[in-house]
Amino acid sequence: MSVSSSQRPSALEHQARIYLRGGAGLTPPVPVDPLSLEEKAQKYMSPAAAAYIIGGAGRERTIAFNRQDFDRWQIVPRMLRDVGTRDTSSSFLGQTIASPLMLAPIGVLEMVHKKADLAVAAAATATGTPMVISNQASFPMESIARVLGETPRMFQLYWSKSNELVKSLVKRAEDIGSQAIVLTLDTTMLGWRNRDLEEAYLPFLRGQGIAQYTSDPVFRKLAESFQPDVSVSKPPVTPATIAMLLKQADNVPGSFLKNLTSGKALRLVRAFIHYFVRPSLNWENLAFLQDCTSLPIILKGILHPEDAKLAVQYGVQGIIVSNHGGRQVDGAMSAIEALPKVVSAVEGKIPVWMDSGIRTGADMFKAIALGAQAVCLGRPYVYGLTLAGKKGVQSVIQHLQAEFELTMGLSGCKNIAEIRQSSLEERVSWRN
Ligand code: FNR
Image (cartoon, rainbow, N blue to C red; front, side, top):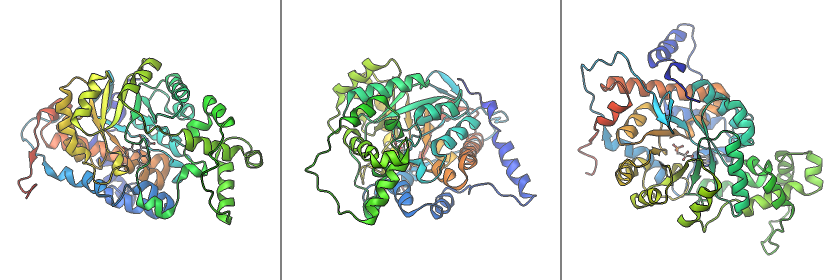
């Protein structure tokens, strides 16, 4: 499943194509500037989708830090270094990929596009970009894997209250050729998300983003015997309640009428809410996952260097430095700030990847110079999906890859190894 860099147009070809098409009055399918991309996508989203996708925890300070803290670092380009040939290829779990870019797991994409993860997988395939399939995807992982063909993929796991369900999901991930299990650690409960709370909208309650569960034989059994907690106070029955029940019946697999009249849809959703996450998860639990699978385990959501050391000690194969795009702890440290400390803590023993705040090719360059092996792209590809489906995601990826290659070359680096050797300078005014 190795993907060579020849599979994508070079930065200069991509750039030239855009300018040439300009002669025919055509502009790129989605805005190139990341802020314009977000602003335009928001116009095409429902208020609930905009809150869920663009929003984050609390006052969204961490979302702001994720962006601002890239400005701490300056690239100091070197000259006259023969960058006539540029190689952005990078290693990924022992394989070669076209550029050090992957797609972060993002749930509930059906909120912005009917084809959701399938369109994203098609764009990943077209560009040779590894995809992390979300535990909260809108389609079962098997359907997404079919679209991915030979493209590298990993499955992202939320550790359920049921170990049997964890086992089943991991087995399915192995069967679809997942190259690792990405275990997300920072979401053992949902963060306090002001915008979602103001909309009073949680997609899962409507049966959205639970396809990995409703397609799982172990989960379906658990749901059949699930007894909801009757002590939980019920909301008043209003026309919106009926609309929600209809939506649930429509969103879960099976006949709409049967789902509604038999109470199956409601049962599946309630069981999902119960089994979704496990707040008591701890380091000792990792042994269970390691016993379940021989796949590499990558821990997503590490920020503290001591946790990075523990990850090495507990024998996992990689780390993703991430604060979940500022969706969990408002005021948490930015990922780019945490990155060099984590890199230094692991002492090269396992690879470190990074997400949260990556918007441009220059951001990618900085993350790699600070020690990331690769970065994961998050919200921007969802904006591409919102505006133009597969084509939109593909354009967003290509813009990023092209800017990355140009930044690399114009900074005097021919390849990823040279980026790692190039040091960034801290802005003098940073802490003043
Ligand atoms: C996420 N993220 C996420 N992470 C994960 O492990 N599983 C998931 O299902 C989701 N779902 C999800 C939905 C939405 C709408 C967003 C915005 C994010 C987090 C994601 O993988 C990644 O860490 C962040 O998106 C990175 O932040 P930026 O760069 O997108 O701001």
